Image 1 (spheres, rainbow, N blue to C red):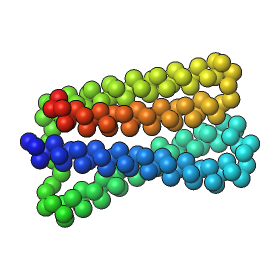
Image 2 (image 1 turned 90 degrees about the vertical axis):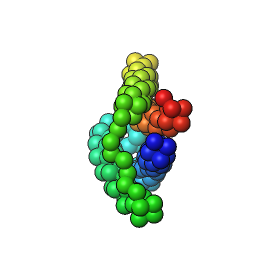
Image 3 (image 1 turned 135 degrees about the vertical axis):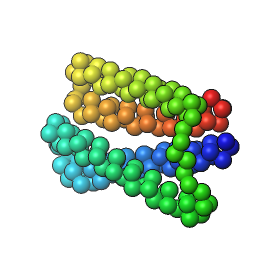
Image 4 (image 1 turned 180 degrees about the vertical axis):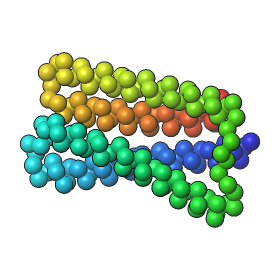
Length: 152
């Protein structure tokens, strides 16, 4: 049981680090490629729509590839398979972290809509949505590690 928890913690840490790196790299790419060249594009809703539509599948694809590479490296180094079975505790932890991330994202969504109701620029709404999704992911992964260590 302890080895299973440790293996899951390694997976969570890989996911956490991957999320930070993906968003950071994508944000730097978008800034250097588009915003630094044409600062006026920040108010273009079409630009933000495209940026969102590229970020989502890119993030999912990168997460999948990195987890596959992690599984291969983990198998080579430790000669152990990554556990695929989950028990009731794993499911309970998953449900708690999903609920937490949903509440955080909903709070961010309400802030984003509030920014528009207050008459702020549209880019503030988009940044708030991106940051709330990112924060929800980070907080849920950290909560998952805490729950596993706590023995929830």
